[in-house]
Length: 325
Image (cartoon, rainbow, N blue to C red; front, side):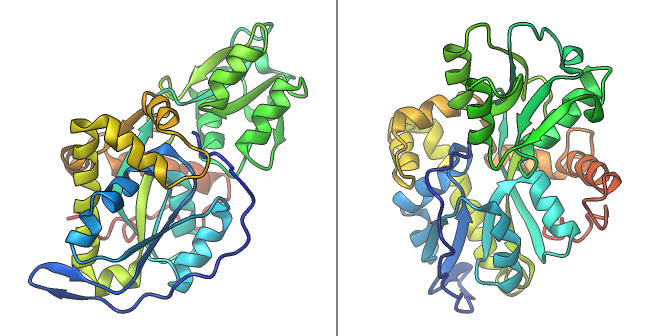
């Protein structure tokens, strides 16, 4: 998934939130903070900002673009950041390892925007045996890779030489430079690699393994308990932004790109083709369904997977979904 590293950011000084109070059903606030990295899936939040949806709801929203996702758990735990957007399996890991967070809504799902790119002589996932694969183990693409092996091959992770990179951009560069036989990439690096490396092809993409790379919005648990009106208002602002994107795509892409450095409306439009955005109707269905394709079922699969690998202290997600009715 395209969470492009623009630059290495130093730790930023974040505004502490002033306690919010509800009035007449709308949120009243001085400052509410949200963080996410550079990724098109989160960018509709900039539509909500630019089109005044936060302001209309009485929210003075400060959005911080922070590329170092390893800081997110501490930001939420300290209460110095109220909302965080990142991939669902890292959110589950944060919760399972003690971060006081609650799921709010699903933002998007990768539908081809992430993929495993390999050299010409590697025709199938089974051909990866003994080969090197560059990826970022801290990213959601690692879960995608392991699930792809589990569901679509006869080999296991230990049959592959996994090269853990600092980020997915570095993984792509390792492949392009010839230092890895395959790599997990997201757009636009995925398309760039396919075009620049002779014989390069996608062995599998996120469209082939649905439910593995999804992004969600989470909130500090104490903040949510004390300010339910604000949480609801942020949700509605997101839903309005998704509606705006469907109705006014050209303006929406401009709004979405405006919050990131070195990202154009054309970049956002291209990335969006490999994504499914979740608006109000999609979230209501996804969050209330009890089927295998529901948020609870998909998330439980992630929790069970990472608990079995020793990376989660619990697989009980009851409190994580405490805000869902």
